Image 1 (cartoon, rainbow, N blue to C red):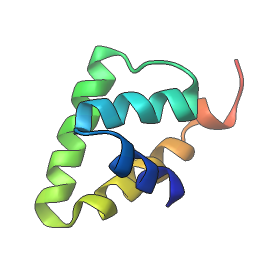
Image 2 (image 1 turned 135 degrees about the vertical axis):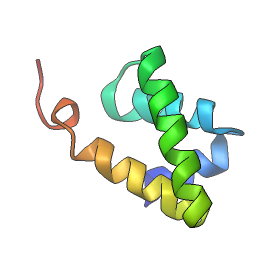
Image 3 (image 1 turned 180 degrees about the horizontal axis):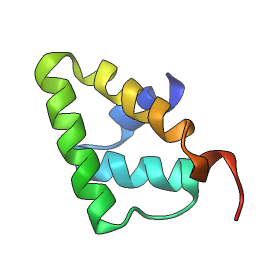
Length: 72
């Protein structure tokens, strides 16, 4: 919740929020395909719910990913 709140407070739009989320969670910038895909996901989620709930879902999925859990 804290990460989603931070992104919503500090970043003006979805593209910059996605970029910030990748830097915070994965220590890197998102690839173009990742940026486009997450932008579409967030748009779909906000169509059926509120912005905060959409971002909570995205952050939870990122935290559950292999990239977050394991080091290469």
